[in-house]
Structure formats: C-alpha cells, structure tokens
Image (cartoon, rainbow, N blue to C red; front, side, top):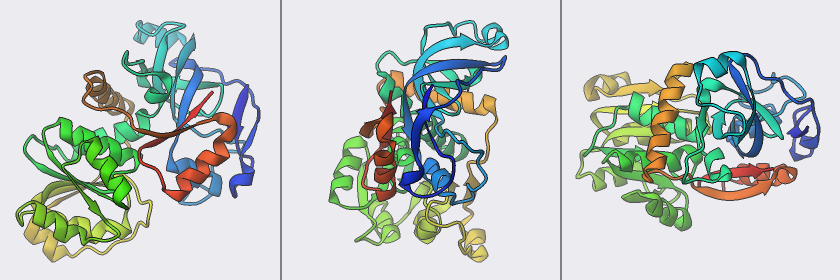
Length: 323
C-alpha cells in the first residue's frame, strides 16, 4: 500500500512516500481504506525526534485520525459493534493513518456524520476529543461561565472555542495577529486577545469585570502558564493538554492556597472514556453546533509541505491529508 513514512528522524527530507505492508486488523479492530487523515504537531515531533519522540519504531507511519470506508472487521469487533459494516463510511481514531489503509479499534470507530465529507471528518478525532474531554469532563464547564481558550488557532483551540460556546459559555481566546483574531471571532469566540501585543491576564480581567475566568484550556505550556494562572478567578479550573512551548513552570503555592483553583492534566483516558468523549463531540457536530475548521488540505504526496505549514504555525484550525 502507498504510505508516508520515516526511517530516521530529521528534517523534511526524511519524509518518504512509498510502499509499505498493508496492516492486518486484530479481533477487536477494523481495517479502513483511508480517504483522509490529518496532521498533528506530535507528528512533527516524531519526525524530528523531539519532545520525547525519539523512540518511535521505524519505519514509522504517523497519523491517528482517519475517515474512509471499512474493508475488514475483526470477529470480536463485529460481535460487539454490529452497526459497523463492510463498506460503511466512518471516522475513527487509530494508528498509521497517513496511508491507503489503516487499523482502528472498533471502540473508536463511528459512522461518518451525514453533514461532513471525509476530509472534514478526519480533522475531528484527536483535537476534538482532546478539547471535549478537557472542557466537559475535566474543567466541567457550565452555561454562563467565562472560559479562556489559549491558542485558539490551533486544532485543539479551534474546537475548544466552539465546544465552550455550544455549552453556553462566554469564550475568550488568545491568538497571534489580526487575521487570527478575526477567524477566532468567526469560530464563535466572544473576544480575542492578540498575545503578541496585549497583556493576556490584564485583558481577561478587563473583559470579565475584574473577576477572571472560570476555566482555562491550555496546551502551550511554560510560555502561557503565568498569564493563565493570573487570568483565573478564585476556584477556577485549569486544564493542560500539552507542552508545545515548554514543560517547566513555577507554581506559587501561597496563591494556589488562597485562590483555591484546580489544576488538571487531561491524562491518558481509557478507551471507554475516549469513546464517550468522541461520541459526545460528534453529537454536537451532527447538530451543527461544532464544525471542523480546515486551514489547508494536501494530497499525501505533499506531506512535507503540510509539515512545513505545521512548523510555521501560520494556520488556523486543522491541516488535512487526502488520498
């Protein structure tokens, strides 16, 4: 089968397009003919061998998110999920998705939402599930609350804005530059802050009448920690889903004590938790309350260009690969 893969870590030149063995599904899996997948920042890290990604097996085919058609179903999967049929159009969270065929656990395979095409659906699973779990399951956001979504132009951020808005929250987000501010407002944010030009915490306090936000969704890390902490009101909830810009930060325990805030990591949810989150998100998608925002789409053969765009951060939403 045709696939994008790496045999060693390095720059864009280590990305290869060629033939790789077709994967075989286990008893609780499905085999999917992939029509679209998407690129996540972790795939850049795997290619670079950075951010703790030095030990991925080689050759390595990246990609978790996929949309396509089921071509094979494991015996256990067929018994447990009778609605999954050969030929059915699906969206799934699995592995090796940057290829013509990929395997996904049946537990993380869902019917393609009728209002989406394959490319749109492939943009959902990882970023959307992460944002949903962070805000709904960890931060426990509620209607009427103020929510700060850090880096609203990212995949997680673009879903976070919409999920918080659909929950009935007032959404504030941070982005870089006027163009991304406009896109964030179009996505549903009530206010957008240019983190290049503004004091984020001060601006959040001004927007909330001095109170601060009830919840913060962040995946940037060190660079945004202080402003995120300062932006929370007493008993606020902070959730981190990643450390794109550094993993070490100072915590003033006295301020933690007096503010009474909650600090959460998204953790490593089990398959049942992941299914619940992705299923909940897809319900919002089918209702039209949340939509995948695709910045650019590339054919698989141009995956190096997709990586280059990801590295630049000059995008809003998701980067999709099509086959």
